[in-house]
Length: 230
Ligand code: C5P
Image 1: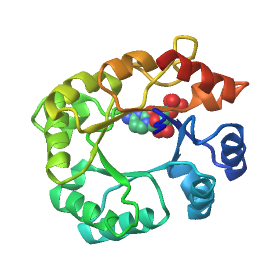
Image 2: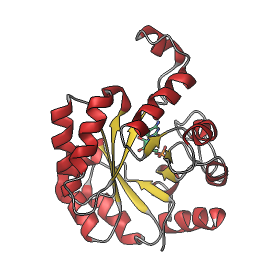
Image 3: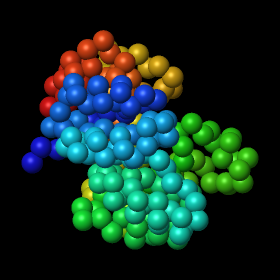
Image 4: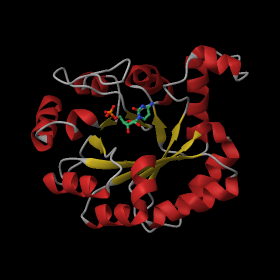
């Protein structure tokens, strides 16, 4: 079965831009990520439209709330027909279990993954929040907690992929942003990894936005990345 590894981040505020991009490619070539900006401006109607066009949609809303609220939000997302959704592992085990129970309402259960520590957060900031552990150990602890709660994997920096793959084993999904082909600008990403390297390091799926969506020929940019990893 065709299993595209690239998840294109549709970081637009205007749903017309998202639909225009979706019209330029096909579900056989990529999956699509809808995040907070696009979802807040365009709503679930857009997600349903992308799903109806045959795309696998990763709804990247990073739920973090009391277990009952996250349970119901996860059910609502699953009922939209999304392929994947996520929560913050820092919401705790009860919240993650509630999310997992929430997605089981859907006919096709979506994948549920966790954000461990945001990659924008430094060791120093974590320390100021009262976390005594060094960041890599804390990421590992949260990732194990997510798997123990029945989640399918984690979002992580490609730099964290080798250690998490070794620590979590083969079945966990590792979804990695911060990916840049050699020819693309890093934009505001601080530490980037090439698509080939991320997959070699154990990533399951690559989240890629601006190198594709900001390219003058997005379909050609996507095709070139697909060729580089196949
Ligand atoms: O355009 P670019 O490829 O940098 O987009 C990366 C996407 O991945 C964006 O939607 C961004 O919000 C998301 N992301 C990230 N780093 C994280 C988590 C998510 O870049 N640690």
